[in-house]
Amino acid sequence: MSFRIESKEQFVELWTSIYKAEGKPDWSHILPYYDDKIYFRDSVQEIRGIKEFKAMTVRLVERSKDLRMKIVNILFEGNIIFIEWEIGLSFKRSPNSKLFGVSRLTLNDNGKITDQRDYYDLWGDIIDNIPFLAKGYRKFMRKMFG
Image (cartoon, rainbow, N blue to C red):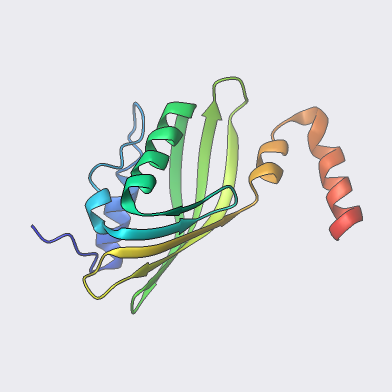
């Protein structure tokens, strides 16, 4: 079997089937589409290599009670894929939160993902779901950075 990402439709099918209707997410079917030398970076971490990437997916599943993803938009051009997404998540002692973000994925000549960069505002999106903190946090952010 060839593990090549060749179309937008194939990518959406692979990506959305990570998040099941019931139970924990499962990346096992999509991991063969990642290059052994995957470089991953997001707001929290920087990871190099498939072994560390797999370990990250295991940690995420272990920490979350519920994790759902919706792909809002996708652009697949040449060897670059951009996806805009919404994730609903809940951890052991926190309310359900929504994160909004974008991922840029780069494919190599073999159609495997060699680079993934996720962009999102982790703390802002989580704090927005905590009533007594949300208003103050956004006011602080506007004062300091707006």
